[in-house]
Length: 328
Image (cartoon, rainbow, N blue to C red):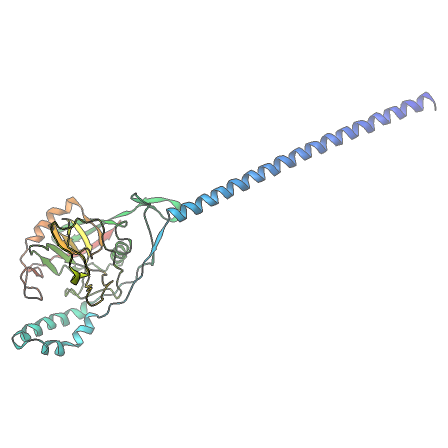
């Protein structure tokens, strides 16, 4: 082999060696990139999994919902009126004229009956120990909702509290949005020793009207027991508690002896002075301080005799009309 051939072979070997080094370096670079990419994918996967698990934990722990079981009323006002003659004749002779008058008043309320859509069955629950809950998009919002009753006597601003009775407060909010309360009269004003409330929410004005469904019982657990009061087995074993001034609660016709429960719906009462009741009436909120003056003025309106003949629990002689009800 000549020196020239040796030179060519040497150069070719160097080029081959250089090529191999370059390929090896490129392969090493590709391998490094693959490793980095795999590491990045692993990190993203782990982070995504952690986020998903965290969201699931938050949803399970905090984004709770309660399922509200809406029922059907046992007897509507129209059903009651159908039994007019039987009801009147069952009364003692000296009370039949009074009973007939009362049944006629009920009959006059039938054309005023209204229905309203049944609220959603799933209602969000607040964060434990707080006044906030999570709704769509995990955005925290308040567990209270402002509501206002614009009456012919002045405004009655109310704060609905969803933590206390989530189903019933949601029902009130739904009824307001449906316009159920607009143009209705508050049909009862009481001023007995233990019960001082203004009751509203019945378009028929009879105390027997409803929206076509009933709400579940959500008995309050944080009201103060009346000092020295004894539990009454006739009332389900519950003793009276104090419903403080300004409390807004759902009226019902529950009867423990008859096994009647979950009879609340649209009717509510506002306590104008501390009152004593069994803890069977769901508390849905409270009247704001700015509405107390209006409520106090309403409480002084004279009343007609109630169905039981008492002058302390009848219809206001001067109308108390909810012109419009709004929320939010």
